[in-house]
Image (cartoon, rainbow, N blue to C red):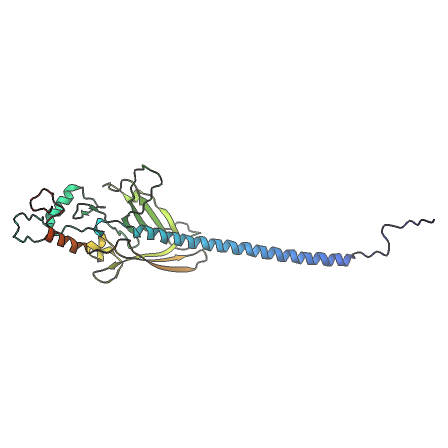
Length: 294
């Protein structure tokens, strides 16, 4: 038997030529470049979208915070009234409804009047001031405070203030201002409370305009200053319109207009108090006073 040894690599076996290998490497190179370009573009798009979403989220958060605070704005005048001056009928010798000046004097005697609580309701409850020191600032007392721990020296009420502050980031700022918010949760009745010493935190950067308008029920129109509405309306605003103009990182300008309203239903407290005093005598007087209703 003749055995013939055959080579492992036969000269007749087909293989890849150098040209075919070069063509394959070229195709793979183009595919790699395309994949890298697509991936890089997707990463850039993702970063842009995330950045835009973050900016819009900041705007939403700022508006949500303002809505939450203003919708729970607090004043006893939403359900009570300022002291009402009524005329004595002369028929009841025990009728002793005090005059407006006497009631206000009694109210001031019950607590110390301060800048933040300038007067009291007919039930001698301190009335917090709604303050607008600048056209783009607003300070009020709200019941939106949420305590995180039990037995804290806090109530559900707190002072909040919204205002604009110049943006000092020269190379990063897209507009001149930042929307700021400060809050005071402790010692809200402190006569020496200085809001300027309370640090604020940034709600939104790149703010170009922050306009506040209040609806005047007496004039039936929007006004941009609390001084243009009546005293009772100033203590119990019913509607707040906010115009916010901000500039994003791409230098695009956006405008949002929102209207906020408190949760309090509307009552004609002056009419109610006048009827109460004229029909039922003086309910807020001492119950042992002659003529007081049983």
